[in-house]
Image 1 (cartoon, rainbow, N blue to C red):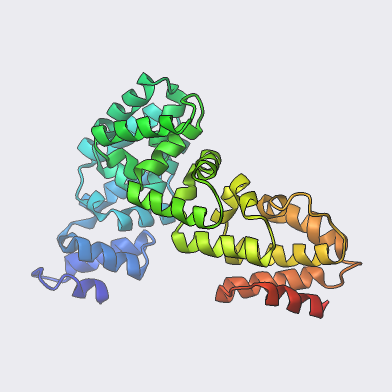
Image 2 (image 1 turned 120 degrees about the vertical axis):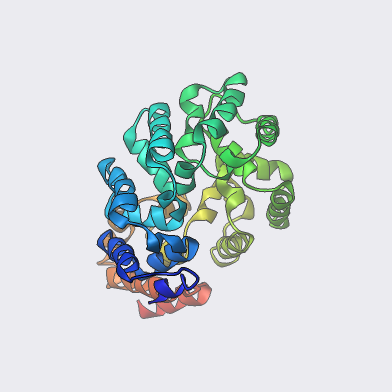
Amino acid sequence: ESALSASKHVHFETPDKPNSAIDFFKKHGFSQTQITKTIRAYPRLLMSNAEKTMSPKVEFFYSKGFSMSDVSKIFATKPQLFQSSLKKKIIPCFNFLNNFLKSEEKTILAIKRYPHVITSDTEALIMPKIKILREIGVPLSIAAALAQTPGVVIFCSTDRFSEVVKEVKSMGFNPLSPMFVVATRAVAELSKSTRERKIDIYKRWGWSKEEVLVAFGKHPMMFRISEIKIMRGMDFFVNKMGWESIYMAKYPYLLGLSMEKRILPRCSVIQILYSKGLISRSNFAYPLVISEEMFLQNYVTPYEDQVPHLVKLYQEKMDLSNKSGMRVGKEHVEATKEQL
C-alpha cells in the first residue's frame, strides 16, 4: 500500500499491472522499504509489463553471479536501471568493466560497491583518468583500481582529476605503489577545506602537519573518517588508554575501526591483562587489528585460569556494544576489573 500510495499521480485503468509489478519485486527479494523507494523514484514502473521490461534486466544480473539480495539492493539504489536499455547501456557497461578489470568477480564487486557505475558512460568517465595516471608512470595494473573501487572520483572532471593527481604526487606518494590510487581517491572525494579542517583536528592533538601527511601516506583513507569519529578515537586512545598521541600517527588506521564493535570490547580485555601483568605493552595496535579468532586465541582463552570468566565477560561487552552502542571509558574498565 505504501508503494502504491507513492504513485498517486499515475492513472491505472485496471489494478493488474501495479499488482504484477509489486509481485515482481516481492518475487525477487525486494523488501517493503526497497519497493517503496523504487516506486517513489519511478512510479511508472507500476504500469510496466514486469516480465517483459524488468525481468530481462534482473535475469542478466543473476546470470553474471549476483545474488538475489545483491540485485534487490542494486536496483533499489539505482532504480533507473529499470529504465536503462539492457542492450545499449547495461550490457556494454558490464562488458567494459569486465574487459578492463579482466575478472568477472572484480566487476561484480565494483558494481556492488558503487551501483552508479552501471548506469553511467563508464568508459568515457574512466579512460581519460587512466590516461592521466599512466602518463605519470602509474602501471596499468594499479591504475585499474580506479575502476575496481569506483566512487566520486570517476565522476569528477578531467581537469579536477589532473589537479588531484599532481597534489598527491607532491605529497610524496610513489606512482608505482597501489597507495597512489588510494590517495588519489581520498583527495578527490574531499574538498581542500575539509582536508585542512581535519588536519587541524590532528594538530590539536599535538601532531605537526608533516606528521599528519606521513600518517596520510600510511593510511590515505584517514581523511574520510568523520571529525566526530576522529575526536572520539583520539580521546579514547590518549585519555582513556594512556597512549601517546603521536603513537596514533604511526597507526592511523586504528581510528577507522568501530569503537563499539572492536575497540571498546578488546581494550577492556587488554587493560585487564595489563593490570594483572599478564601481557606487556609492547604493541598496542596488534590486538586491535587481528581477526576475532586470533584475538580470542591470543588474549582471551589462554588467560581463563588466571582471569576466570574472561570469555563470558568479553562476550557480554560485545553484546552490550552491539545492542546499545554504549560508550565505555575508564569506568567501564574499572567496573570490569571489579567483576573479576
